[in-house]
Length: 428
Image 1 (cartoon, helix red, strand yellow):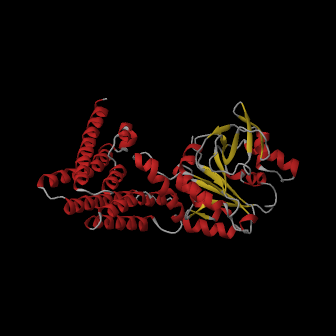
Image 2 (tube, helix red, strand yellow):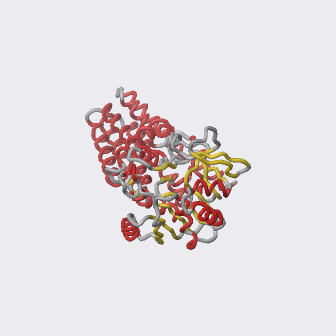
Image 3 (cartoon, one colour):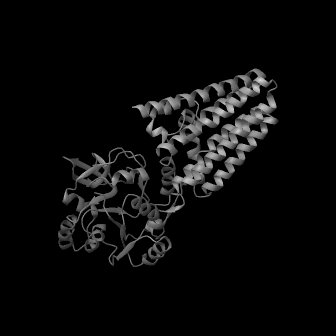
């Protein structure tokens, strides 16, 4: 059952971040806490308990009022004590299963989607983004924590700072409160309780302890925001490797809408250049294809992705492709037969997108997820643009005619095969 409440520990003084509340530090355009709470709400968490100190309380209250999150604040009047005490203070406000997270940990959407389904301590056996030297390591035996600590020489997994617990954990904190006068760490609670361990391996998560961690965290959020499923061969092996680096640089400087407008303008300029210099036009067309991924990456990293944005982006892509092929045909072709072939190339290019979007409208699901074979068919937009660039690098009449013939055959064959695969799926 999905936990309905989450406890967020935010009582630390954040000395390495200039004594600012780490949960309110912005990464990829969003406060860490905003990101965590939003993703947890999407997974069914309805309320939050925030444990903080008196000094930071006004900052967190202002944040809560600004965004309207359902949060109850608990003041830890002894923040110098270990964070186990902060957890204990939430005892009276939770019952049943609840999520426990740290205010300075940043999680990707895919990580939280998986983690909330687990139990106990959520651990990672193959961490990609965390600083291993600084991370808390675990030894796990029979599915439970046997030993925990940062200095373990041999370890099985890394503590992600994400827990799915129940009120039974407060029996342990109650005992530690009495034994240690409230000064104990969460790791002591974990070890004494011998918490169950759920592995969520290789997904995006990290903690932000110092300003230098922000760059790594931004990059993680962009890299884990890649749509992926519908990407063609060129996007997977070239475009995304470049676009994600660009997105990591721009994610806090431009909005997704600004990037969409820039990429559309860039694409139209590349189309106009077919009248002047097809080789330069082809190169700029390929660059626009790389940039076309940036707006979506930024939107997902900033938690600003929405259906309307994807809808408009798809429409603008069709305008760019239509303008490019139309102007290229006008500038280079002479015989009526080749105008017909160019028209078929243009029509097929539009229909490739339409055939998958129409599937989504008819069946309510993503075509590439429901019919995996579609991912292997050549002719997606990124592949067509890359091929176009290659043929235009040496723009003699024969190479341009071959390009239009290839695009016409590739796109219309792809649409026919798509329709056949969808028909097979229906019959099956």
